[in-house]
Length: 455
Image (cartoon, rainbow, N blue to C red; front, top):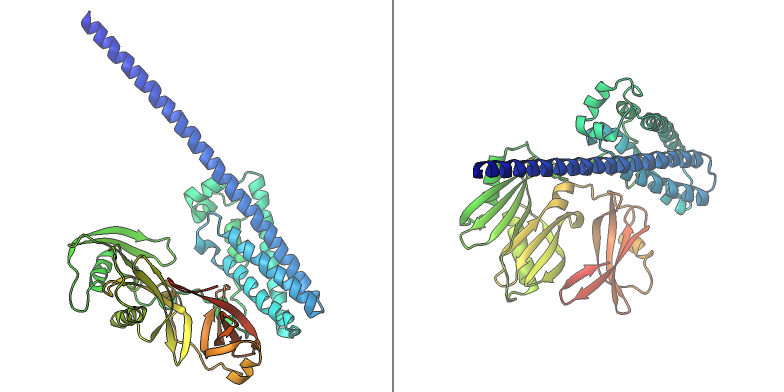
């Protein structure tokens, strides 16, 4: 009898377990289905937004070709710049490999930057040249081809001939091979629209950056993880003294980062943890950070600046000048910019963390430098310093002056005179274009007990 009861109990337990498993499977299936539908809806929204903005790009390009006044031209080109930027944003949201849409992205990027540069011409009451109009005409032609392809893709999407989930799972190439009857592989056709498009060539502040997205300071060959590990250990040496490592963990390759890096977590004999990121290409140190606590502030800001500069020189970064800093919990983070021929190159920026108890460098971040560092042409000065000063507000009492290359939000660079000065009790930085005398930017300096900031 007991055996029967025991057997019955086991059978009941198994039955309950099976019911639970089936229930969980149903829940997981429904959750997965709900997630896939949410993703599908999100991609649909991004695609239709992309299509709308590309249509607007085509419309504004057409309008720019017939505009006759600088005032209206500036308005049209500013609208074109905005719509091309938004189109890029929604293009990046699609589940398509970046290399598959590289030229499409490049085209939209150039429309954005080029329209902005021409709008500035109009703002300064300059008419567009024949070359400008020819370039706009060429861009308009490509925008029409892009719009037509997107409209065909929209028809395919509406008819159910493809789904984003399948595209994401199987990849663009595999998917287009499988459904070759769909719009003659419309995603490939997106790129075919630009098979002869190599980018505009025009004179202006934005020309170099429109067609050049390479990481200029990222030099050398690809390395394996073991070599990256050695470079991380080597970088942590203090002079010739190696750091005492208790354990080092390989955290793998971050392939989707802006700069692909090998990440390492290092535990020292003193119990501190240090994170280091080493670029796959060339083995450059992109990031290093130690978690050591700092409980006192003994060294001065001037000494911290000096310590940081010496550290950078030791690590192979010459001609760096401190700019702005921020203090927090006994640690000062200092921004250093590269200097070439007495011209301060703000895009080539390195951030260094210095402990204020003993001057030890606890961290470094080199992304700006690695992205942008290259030799610049700093001889493009067309106006002298005195001419540049004529653009300044008469109330500005100048404290310092010099040449600088500044980055813009459109991923370009400008060679400017940098004037630091005061109006009443406020400090400002004013940037006057060294080629044409235009006022390019104004920053307000805020001095606080914890650092010098700009707004």
